[in-house]
Length: 257
Ligand SMILES: Nc1ncnc2c1ncn2[C@@H]1O[C@H](COP(=O)(O)OP(=O)(O)O)[C@@H](O)[C@H]1O
Ligand SMILES: [Mg+2]
Image (cartoon, rainbow, N blue to C red):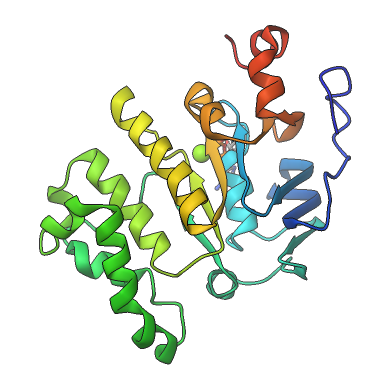
């Protein structure tokens, strides 16, 4: 699709029958200020897509738009072959999209187990009862440290453990698709590496597609299949991670490498 030379061709949609998410020409405003300009972005089944961009580029706005927290002025969002434009966020979770928000947004006094159970809250009652025990076990198998800390308040966990908890809470709803807003923020380089490896494992083992929004381009590129670069609310580059990794020209132009 878009190569380096054509990287300003932002209206191209990378669409195929295996597309899980297609964002087409989406525009989002805060009042009169346009934060997203004709965004086109696709995530295919079993893919990890990274959206890279500096502070203020529009990354969080994009995730809030996708998860129904912000309305759009123009454009279309299709998830799993169903249009979800203007769908409220509690319904979006039921369709299989789970979010790990910016800054984790944990309630400090809430225990680890209650925080995880919160992740199933928007599912219907019967479904919740049926699946939550097995999901809890699965999360504890993925993150054994959470089992050890199950009755501790989340504010007593380390930064890395809190990020695992936020990820575990998102996985509790049994999503097909996981979106994460800067999960590396505030973590040491070693923990960032562990977090990225965990995302790769989750994607591969659980068959979950991932949209990863990051300022930490180097860490995200290592696990991503496809890269979008966002600048001032516009997609200025879309290409495979392999091509981005191989091109010093792209890296110096877009990633300050
Ligand atoms: N609630 C808001 N009201 C008005 N402008 C906002 C609001 N949130 C973000 N913005 C503006 O939208 C732009 C994109 O912000 P954001 O999506 O938070 O960027 P990023 O997550 O990439 O740092 C910035 O110019 C920011 O100032
Ligand atoms: Mg942000």
